[in-house]
Image 1 (cartoon, rainbow, N blue to C red):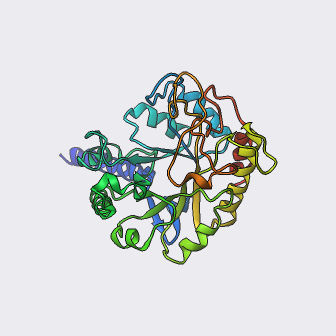
Image 2: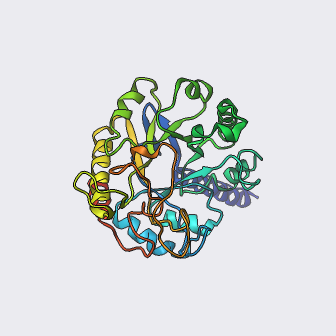
Image 3: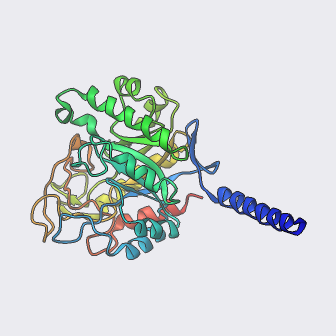
Length: 337
């Protein structure tokens, strides 16, 4: 009997040690002051927006994820931002294995597919909240530009946004909740969305977004990052010594200045997700060819022509050939410890 008790104790102690080891390996993402922390260590987002739609298609497809991850690692990217949840666990596994984290975005009305309106977003949170690839959850993408989606009253969105954040906090104690807001949040959004931990901001202020950091520091002490910043590689007109037509130099110069502003304000800004990783041929016309044109809200701040040619925003083209902007991102991101 004594031997049985001793053996039982040995197995019990071994179980406790294993449990402790597993718990110590579990990453916790949190916020402290203006910083994002991963297991207590400050985390700076060297990010890119990622929506890989193949030529001729409308739908996201991760068929060449391995190649994309190789390019991202080369560029020093540590975070990808997606606009809708990644449903395939194998995709998240590959991203995590590459040492990259994901900002998972949820839309408001996606036909009941993990969206905020139906409440099904929380099912995804509960299923994947233990996955090491997750950096944080992000609700909406510049919906403040679209009160028409919320019965003409943007307060309906802010109420839904904050309620969704509360629900996530109850389910997941290990990841913060963000939103991607169009430009600097106003007093109404801040007052109604007190449960948002991190404010992402899609900012297009030509090639110098730096003024937004001082403005943010004067109205909030929470972490923020640029959830979108960048420009396209097509000039609609000739301007500022940049010739009309495809112009990778214009894109590279603008992204150089944008990233310099971010890095100079790292005491306030927790990083940036450059828009975007790859060219997106599905946005402005025939999905089998690269079209000129497209439109986005508040887009007159796009350098250097004030025109967002929506199918030219990648730092790589649709075949994954590197543009000049890729080398800029690579140099800047790899200079950050």
